[in-house]
Amino acid sequence: MSRAAIASCPAKINLVLRVLGRRSDGYHELDTVFQAVDLWDTLEIRASDSLRLTCDDPRLAVDESNLVLRAAGLLAERCSDGPRHGALSLHKRIPVQAGLGGGSSDAAGALMLCDRFWSLGLGRNRLVQLAAELGSDVPFFLTGGTARGWGRGDRIEALPFVGETHVILGCPPFGIPTAKVFGRLAGWLTLPGNGVSVSPASAHKWPRDNDFGFLTNDLETVVFEGWPELRRFRDALVETGAAAALLSGSGSAVFGVFPGRDRPTAEAERLGARFLGWRVLTTRFIDEGIRLGAPERCEVEPNREA
Image 1: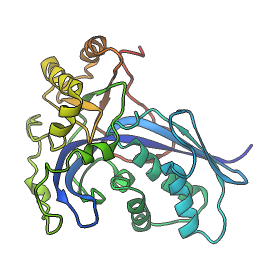
Image 2: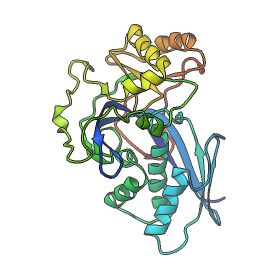
Image 3: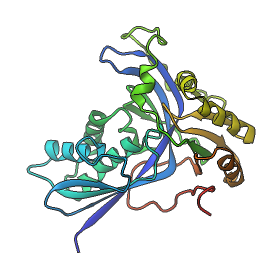
Image 4: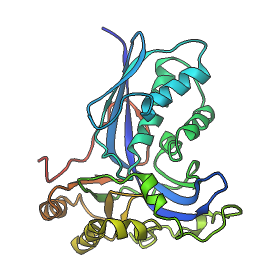
């Protein structure tokens, strides 16, 4: 039997997302607070005579355009003394084009998984450098938990864990490409493309006594204009009892937080019945990132699984 290794790759939401302007390199200057949640993709690697990828989601390409294969290839190219092989298999549970970071998390998982599988022994700093080459929020998933990201979102500072808070997550039956959202920002941002200063992490109002009023996302205005059904789901979350509700990243996922509550299964069931075609699930904040090994538990989708 061939040797195998597995990585579990969590989703994220953005508790804060400020878009401060366009940089001289074409990216946008961001100030964000990431929060890892208990929703996982699973990535496995086995011995093989080539480096290849399979995926159980037929919508995803399995060539070099996939971040998993790009991450493994980058690691093999930069950090090994010869060709490195492995048969990678990706099981997708995190919705795609939803602002939940699934592709970035999978890329971070591939870096950590291949580093161990190939016995490279790279340190955290080197993995962070490689992660930043792959995508803006890939470095976050190496640590997970609660963290601030700035620059392109790739400069990460760990923050105190907010606490195990339950969440209802709603994903419509469509995704929104990130590039399409930022393209709609043309003419909306008026800040210059250089010299943008990033506010200190202490400027974020941190939750006290279950107060999540600090949640904000500068992309909500432009996204809700183009996809008003997302606004309706956000408002329904508040009506259902969420302390706060917000678009995650550039969408299309919308989440509501239920601090100090048991898992809001009944509320999620009602929303699932009201928003037909949506994937509505419960999850929770977690204080971890990529896990080498299968997840011990995952929250379930109350409108699809008992």
